[in-house]
Length: 432
Image (tube, rainbow, N blue to C red; front, side):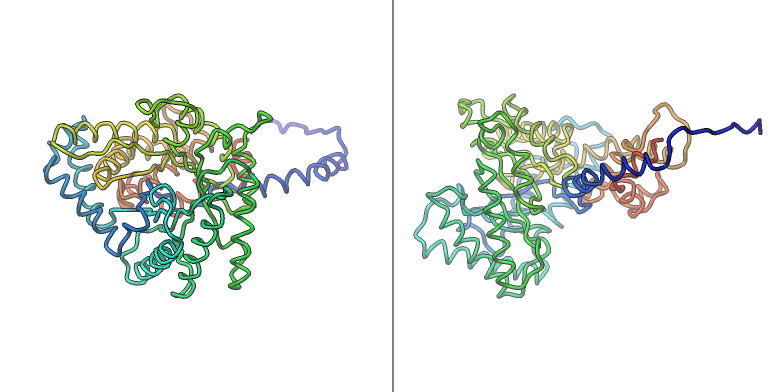
């Protein structure tokens, strides 16, 4: 070792103490407003089913119909790969995983819809449908046939339908409580939000339900659906969606983009209403920045082009859906909406291809980072966080197996979780 360097300072310890004291409110604010990702599984999609169409066999029926579409229009790996343009190295791994997924877990997140997909009904009919939905969802979780996440989308908080939406929510949640309690995978969606005050009102509604049943404060969270221009830009030019996240008081779990309502709100003609329209890209970019670090996840919208009819039309619709899903994944929108069972094969094909084609490179980079080894890319802690998150999402959806991840990285799932969700100070400290 060489000569030890003399270390000298000029500031008294009291200076640092004073600075820390002055920033204590900011430290607390950062912890409160930006807690980071919750570390839970994010579904790759949400399936919407009208309240009157939802039944005990809906999840299995969607899987069976998706498998039937594969059998009819792409009965083997080669034909499916040809439709989607998958390379030979991905054809069999993706196709086999798609079929296995449709047999094992065809739907990851299901929303029983009491809004646009259900429409106005007599009060007695909607009451009965909401109670039925609660009973069927409770039974599904008890007998193991439920999707990992299930819940309802009620009507919005606008004056014309507010009372109906509140009552439907109350009937549904009360039904779940009477059937044994709220399931862990319960998700609620609040549509057509335009003002942050509507979000805070909905949060108060959930708080009132929790108190009425002696539930833990904050037990009920909800997704905010972004379907209006006012949800993106307020009249004073500020980003309304950021206000909405804070107005939820920690209850917001997701921001879901509504492709067609939002596009129509901006005057986009029907032929051009799509999730890759520039207006859609702008809205989702604002949502993404507003949600970053808050623990609120962003979901893309849907396509209304259904894979039905002769093979040529099905293949065209599959290619469109596959391309839109891949585009969304590259932009870090890891969830989207699926409107038809025929969309499931291409949803999972796009997701599985996305994770499998980048798996080996991501695993190698993460292994080098953890082992402090050299390489042609110099990764930082923030990149290690992204690499770990990528692998975890691949594991959650079934694109990757833990054995192959462990083989290439030497890491357990717990190791990946630790790297993907470090404490706030860890990234800064480890980068020094």
